[in-house]
Length: 321
Image (cartoon, rainbow, N blue to C red; front, side):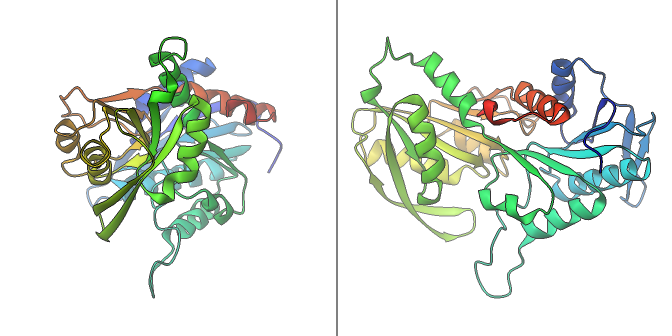
C-alpha cells in the first residue's frame, strides 16, 4: 500500500449513483467509467472501462436493500480495482449494512458485522469511509483504517437554522433519544443545539416490534426532536412520538435520523404518525414510489467529498465533526 495514488478516481455500484455524482461534483472530477450488471443466474458482473493503475480509487456503495447484492457488487468492484493495480482503494460506504449484528445476543448467534469487515479487507480495501455506524465499536472489527463520519453536525446546522436561538427559546425544546442505547449520540446532538435531553424507555418483545414503557425527562408542552441513527420499519420512532404526546404531553414532535432504511410499510407509518417531519440524510436512496410530505432528506455528499479530499491529501478529517 502506498501513501496515496497519483489522482482521485471515484466509482460507484448500483445502490446510489446519485450520491456518487454529488461527490464528484464537489470534487470537480468525473464519475469513473464502469458497468455493474448481473448474469442470467444472478451473479454480479463488473467491467471497469478506464485505467486505474496507480490511482487513488474511491468506491461509493451503500450496502442497503438489496443488501447482499449491493455488498457483493462492492466486494467484486474492490477485487477488480486491486487486480488492475490501483494505488489505494477506499470503500466509501455511506450506510454500512449488517451493523446491527455486532455482538452475540444469544447462544450460537453470528457476528455478521465482523464477517463483513473481514470480507472487505480480504477483497482488497485499504481503507473504509463510512457514517454513523449503528455501533461505534465496529471500527475495531477492521484491521485497516476506518474514517467514521458523524451526521449530527448536519442536523445541528439544520435545526439551528430552523429554530434560531435569537427567535426561539431553546428551553422549550428537548432532544429525545428513542431508546436507552441511543442516549450517547442523542446527548452529543443535544449539546450542539443547546437543548435538554429526554429518553423514551422501551421494551422490545421481538425483532422489529417494541412496546414503550416510560418517558424519562420533562417534555410537557415542549417541542421534541427525536434523534436516532437509522429508521428501518419506523415502529420504534412512531411509538416514541405517540408516547411523547400521549404520556409526556409534548406539544410538537420532529424526528431526524442518518439512515432511512424504510422497510415494509415504514413510509405509510410515518405519514400517519404524530411526527410533523422526519429529516434523513441521503446515505440511502428514497423509495421511488414515495409520494408523502413528511419525509425529507439533507444532502451529505459534500461532507463525504471533503473527507475524500482529506484522505487523498493525508490531512485530518476531525474538522468535519
